[in-house]
Length: 443
Image 1 (spheres, rainbow, N blue to C red):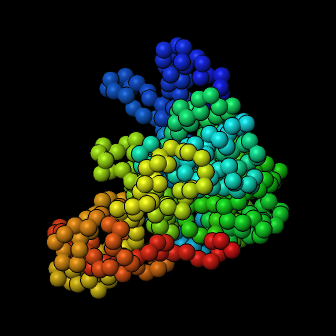
Image 2 (cartoon, one colour):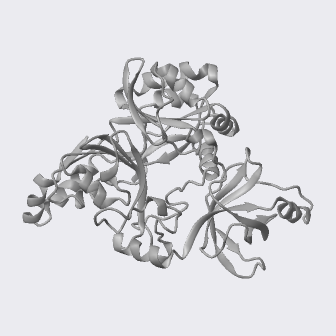
C-alpha cells in the first residue's frame, strides 16, 4: 500500500527541483500492476499480467480460458463457452463478478472532503456517512478525465474508485492540505453481485436484513465472520450490490457467496455478459464511449460531462472545482453534443440481409467500435455510435451514440453496418437512455 501525506511532501517537492517527483515515479513503477520481464530467448520484453485475489476460484471455472486485460490484471471474458447464461443470470437470478482491478484510493484527514470537492464535480461536502456518490472529474477546460465512485466511510474517510490510475492526480491537487492518500488497489478486493436475487443471497450470507439499504448507500457487515463493506451499487442497471473485502479474505468470501447463492441460481459472470447489461442500462465505458481528456489526441475527441448525459452530476452549489468555469459557461449556452440511445429498426435490418439472400446476422457479443450515424437521407453524418449489440431481454438491436443536441427522441437516423462485406445503412431511431430501468434497481 502506497500513501502520500500532502502537507508533509509539498515543501520537499518545492525545494528539491523535481527530486520528489522522481521519487514518486520510482515508487509507483516498483508497484505497477503489469510487471515487465526480460525474455532471454528472443531478447524481448513480455508483460506478465497479475491475477486478482479471487483467481484461485475464478481460474478453474473458465471453461474456454477466455481472459482479458483490465488495469494490469486478467479477468474472465466468460466462464462458459458462451456468455448467454451469464447474461440471463444478471436479469433473472444473480450473477457474481470479480471487479477487483478497479483502482481504489483511501483519502483521509481533516481536508479529505475539501480535496475531493476540488477534484470532482459532485458535492462531496454535503454527502452523509454511508453514502456513495457516482461522479466524473474534469480538467480545467471542463473535459472529462474519468468517472468513478466516492464512498463516504467516515467524517474524514473516503474511498475513491477509478478506471485509470488517479493517485498522481489526487496528489497534485492536494498541495498544502491536511490529507493522506493511500493506494489500496492491491489490498482491497471486490465482487459485484447483481440481479433480482442478489439481496436475498446477501441477507442470508450476512445474516442481516438489507431491505433498508438504499440505492447508492453502504453498510458494514460480516459474512461468515469476514468483515466486509456492502454497497448498493453496480454496473448493470439492475438490483445489485458490491462487496468490498481485505484481499486476504477474498477466497473465503467467494466461497460463502457461492454456497449461499447456489439455491438461487448464482452464476459467476464475465465481462461479455456485463457489457450487454451496461449497454442496456446506458452506462458509459471509458476509452469506448468517451476518451479521457488525458488520452485524447485532438480536441474533438474530448467530451464534457454535460455532453455525456451527466449534467446531473455537475454541482452548482459548491466552492470552485476543476473545470467549473468551463462547465458553467457550457451549461449556460447548452452542450453541442448529447449521449443517447439508438434502436435499430428490425424491418430495415431484415430487408438489408434479404437483398443478399441471407437472414439477419447479429454479432454474438456487444461491439465496441465507432460507427457513423447519418441523417434520414443517408448523406449527412450526424454523429457516431460507440458500442451496441442485441438485447436478449428487450429483443432489440441497440446502440449508444454521440449526436448533436438538436436530435430529439424519435428522430429517424441511419446507422452504418456491414452486410456481406458491403457497407449499408439501417434505419434507426433516437431513444432515451436507459433502455432498461427496472423498479427493483432502486426499490
